[in-house]
Image (tube, rainbow, N blue to C red; front, side, top):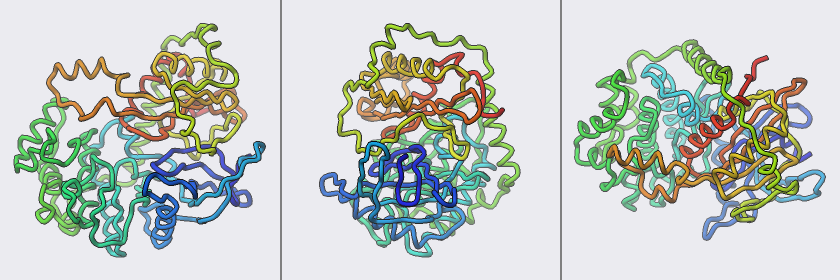
Length: 472
């Protein structure tokens, strides 16, 4: 059993630029937490991850707001023990509140964009969190859909303060490219609160449109250059030409997003002006309506398991290509940092990603199908057979044929598509006291759009093995 301080490590939930997040259980109270673990000795060039972790812990300790993930416990010097293998590693960790419904990014990608009333419900909660942070002098500096989570009651929870700062002005280039304000790319000093609001505008666009407004807020971006030239009409015409003709968006929302994404930071609205914008003053969905909407969305995902697709049959000789010890094909051994758990893990209802599906097929068969998917689609594969887990790397080339079709339609391609990659972990989890299993995909690091597209491809590949739901 892997442990960290007073906690058992149950499974990995995800991975960031310099940390891993595990589902943890307090050994005395049984309380479930998200354990963010940072290697105490890890460095990347001039970046001292230990220093970043200590700063994040210091800032997160000061924060208390209903729409921000709560810190329960932390340590800047604790040892992670990996059980039977006897290995120990010194780490920093934070025991954080669990947001059991996962990331907004995955929810939108898997179930679709929100209507304006639902988007307003979440956007107002985000504004409350940002206004609170401004009041205590903290800038988040990495606002994005991946860092906005939902708890079990579908309330918004802002997470990941790894890049946050108390400095009024900054000049370091940090954040996530698609959400970064133009002044960051210019290399000029910028105000953290201002770039947080810019990113919130990008996030609002993503909630209602289901995609990103641009690649980067620079003058050479095929989408953002229209905003920079004060031609919001061209910007919106381009985006609306790509959606279903039945889709509508209110003029007040078009105006708000356009203002928030403006090129000159002095011309963009402050948070009080955003909160009093006509669109924000309109009626939001009620909490009850939001809960019902998400229950309907999840029912839709479950209904996909009832389709009568053929099962994927795997030739035995293909499975034999993979030895019981595991294979490494094109994966740098340095990708592993020793934070690996052992044995098939339990399905835990408190936290299962929406990038998952259930099956009554034998777990050995599920593992065979998973291996066959990897053998067909990637040259990078690590098999952890005792864990019923496979790790692999996917590049944009997997979707090259689709990209070629899009190019013929003269849609703008993302810059440096060839460089887009994602590392993915897929594992088979067992239900307690039931003869069924959950196949769960977890993004380790890399492009999240690629992750979700790969999961959709994986789910289709499994075919009729996707044959039950998590509901008894």
